[in-house]
Amino acid sequence: MRSIHQPTRPGLAASLSILMFFIPTLGYTSDALSFTPEVGVRYDNNVGLAPKSADKVEDFVTRVGGKVQYTAFGSPTNKFVLGGGVRYDHFFDLTDLSNLAVSASALYRGQFGPEPTSVWYSLKGEITGLYFKESEIRDGYKTAITATLGKRLSDNFAVSAGYQYQLRRSTNDDPEQTPPVNPSWNPDEVFDLDRQGVFTHLDFMPTTTMTLYGEYSYFTGDVAATGRSFNQGATFTRARDMAFGPGFIVWRIDADVHTGRLGIKYKINEQAHLNLYGQYLKALGESDNDYEGTVVNASANYRF
Image (cartoon, rainbow, N blue to C red):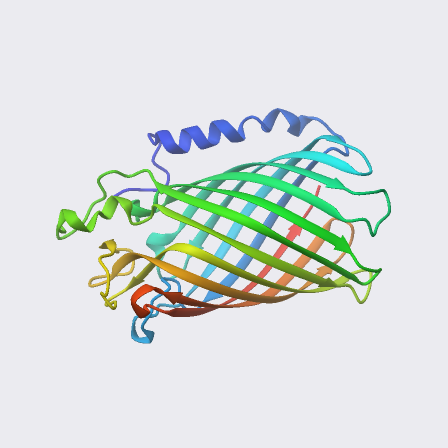
């Protein structure tokens, strides 16, 4: 059996070497540098995104992590920020899905004018290495490119919208499958996913310490969904999903995913923040493999 603490994992070593780029800055005290540890817990009533209600598996997940950001240059109207992060998610029941993620990012943000209500724009690229406790078919990396346009409408309202492209690739060319599966299933490709979508975000700030927010996103493309049975109107790439137990299969399907989120952020002080949100998603999958899910998340962070 594998352990997430295995020392001889070249993918993990590569991701950590990327993060090492940021480590020398930790000894440098400046307004340009920040470190933000975070803890959180979430409840997910359909972890595997199963289309059929009988196959839904729920779980609680705790998260511990941190991010470091360094503003390479900045002015009142633009800035360029480098970032790195590490986080660990622990699943209480589906323990094989517990995972470590190591990320690196670059963000450019500009503004059309010096006024607080001027329209702003940003472009962000991020890459994340994923390492699972006992689900090697999920090991790999994911990237995201995000373009956003936003504006502060008043002292109390701000709005933004954007586009995002996501790519995920498995780094395991020969995942363990017990019992063995038909090679035509292509189990090594089930987590090779490509999707893109648009999103919008609205903030309402009734006080200087509280923000109420809402988000909506629409994404189309590949989704990895786990269940015991699917409508097989098309030939799907699939694999045994042993992390969920005997009889579960993970399928790569094409789906249109609608997600809504409502939340509240509370600023305890300039460094400490709380965040609570509820999320609902509805997906329309090919061959009527539709699914839905609900997530409730609470987190806290402190910025140094």
